[in-house]
Image 1 (cartoon, rainbow, N blue to C red):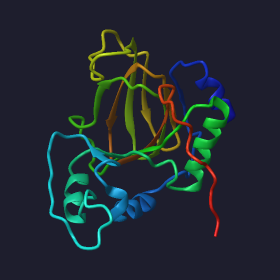
Image 2 (tube, rainbow, N blue to C red):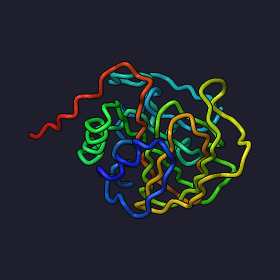
Image 3 (cartoon, helix red, strand yellow):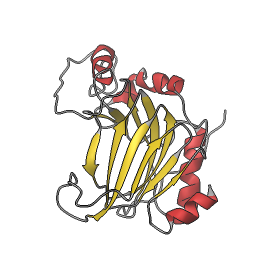
Image 4 (spheres, rainbow, N blue to C red):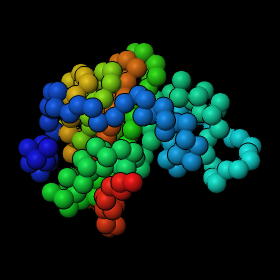
Length: 215
């Protein structure tokens, strides 16, 4: 992991094949999806302009969490992602801790998944992010394109003006780094699961407490 962090410090896109294994699974994702407090509308997102509403139900601590039947409909139709997932298991928490210790920058984990087979009409079109992103392919395959175009303001969705400087098909265990403000595009090529570690220079808050509680 330290060799990867040294490359991150250069702030240039890179791709590493087969370097990260067994950090998350479909079984763990299934557990999170069925944990009602976890699927509130601030943490769970999907790529669509669809709008959903639902009625309150008994015993909920958060009425803004998705009911299971409606959630199942969405995840079977769209590319989805969870934010604020850096503590979903000890391995992911430790990756975030290592990055934070070495770079002194708060790091999160975002879980991206698509339940559909190849559908190039869905996914993240060319865009840039405020954070650096270290992305691990967990299951399935994805196509990533990265351009030299840099943006610091305006709409985050942008069209590239040049040919890609990096174009790869990510397989399980592969890792790609995309520096902040760098135009890129991700397309699911199969049912897929990946973890993105956004590394933020623009946040003033300290990193999360990384202590792992044992009972």
